[in-house]
Length: 207
Image (cartoon, rainbow, N blue to C red; front, side):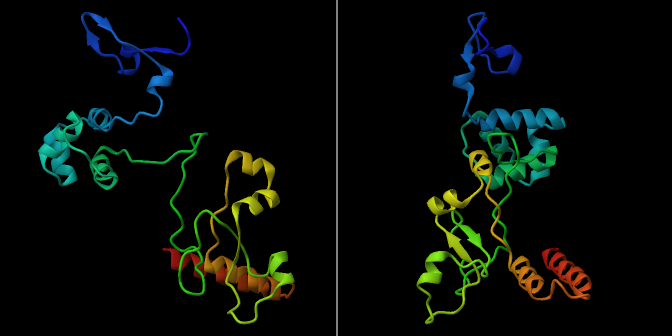
């Protein structure tokens, strides 16, 4: 049998029709997200009935039945709520099956308090872009960070990281402040103690 063919009984993807099993290729199975089947499997893992799961998740029993049958749509938030009592959780994975976390809530913001666009790569304020060095602006507040548009960033970035699709998170205000002070005081004898204090403060703010 060809390696790209999967029989239903093995992966619970087959349908019993007329005593035979439907055969589906791997390509047909990719990209599908059968919420109802996943929720039923989650109940199976946890050993919960529909009523027990509904009670544990704080929803109506008809919600669980409707989702599993496909008669009821479900938001990501409600699906996560339904999975929690089963000990399972939702996750976003990249092409290498590594989990992708959310955009950092404490990422640095611009002078107006707005988030920088998530698709842009940020640089600390001391790394002034060449174009701004050539044409400085004295009518604006000093920026808290600089950004590269994607095309520029790709030219400047690490080729291997770019191929893997890796992008560093936007820095936090605490990280930029640590960098600023390290540049100013990093050669002093008391800097290690100061650095430890800054790290402790940043961790306390994150808790």
